[in-house]
Image 1 (spheres, rainbow, N blue to C red):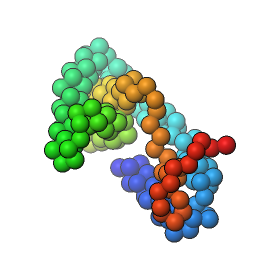
Image 2: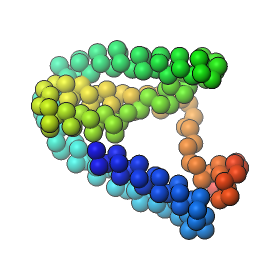
Image 3: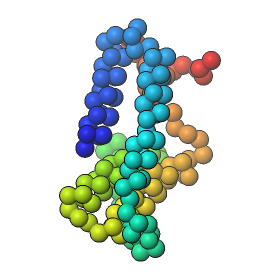
Image 4: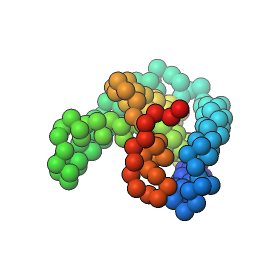
Length: 170
């Protein structure tokens, strides 16, 4: 859980820094921080990958992963679409785009699967199935959307907090 808490705290501190000390939290500094943190992300996945048992990479795990994905993913998407249509009155297409963008669960699934494996001794087949589910939900938006979604908050916000859309960085 410390990965999730650490990522949350780092994001919160960066956001507060951007609002309270705009000169220190310039776009270039925040970009450098993101670049630095993205350098270490592969090490987390490498470490997590070295702890995957061989039984988790079986055809049985693949089949169970496909089954979990075919059942859970449509339910998750349907709940988000229904909620957005009822609460915000969005169109089906707009709600589905949001639901697909929210579908990745890579880190959460890896952390929870790791906890289940270490503390609750789930079978390696279920662990492997969860890894498959995490991979599919993570890849889904990039397979569905033709254009990447830009989620850089610094691009759309001025240091004084007012929204502003900037042009492409030079």
